[in-house]
Length: 146
Image (cartoon, rainbow, N blue to C red; front, side, top):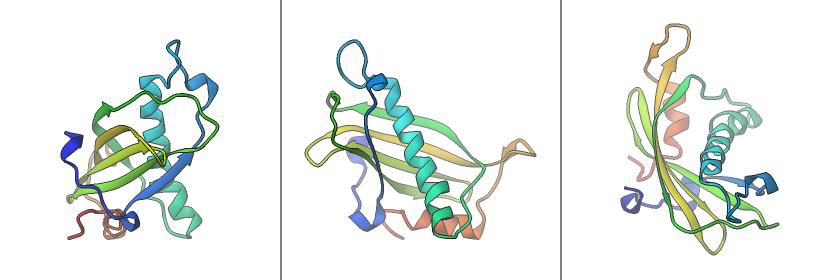
């Protein structure tokens, strides 16, 4: 799955840095597997909400996760150094897109993952199409660019 995802150039990646919290560590001394999904969620929130708002752009809202895939490559131990989630878009359709992620530091990749994301109309409780502005924003991270 994640082994075949092409890795984009840096300008097509969104980078979210974070610090591991003591509570993220399980009884085996490494980051608990469930916490990684939280790291991916934090990265998506930055990518589609906080970053556009900071730039004076509207956030991309009304999206739901249809599927996650995650491959644990090596244990992530507690460290005082930041770790990051690098995220990019691998497919962009009219009403959905695919994300690829790496949870990594400068030396190692700890997790590779993918998510299927669907545009969703919360009030109508059904999928919808992306707006032109949403597609343009999401497309900034598309790799390979079309």
